[in-house]
Length: 75
Ligand SMILES: [Zn+2]
View 1: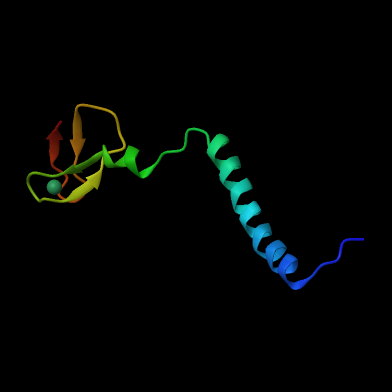
View 2 (view 1 turned 120 degrees about the horizontal axis):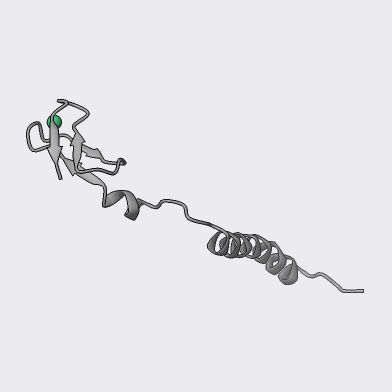
């Protein structure tokens, strides 16, 4: 039988959450899929030249409407 002293108990107590975090990191790193990140949406951020409203343009197209002043903005 394995004798569990205080050092081994602390080592097990600290290594179990570390192993769980490592397993979750591996899981989400390789099974994350095609989720959008902040870097993807940063490319879609636009500023209206009329009212200086900053908004995220999630639509594809040449003409975008400002959500604040409803002006049409050509990209
Ligand atoms: Zn505007």
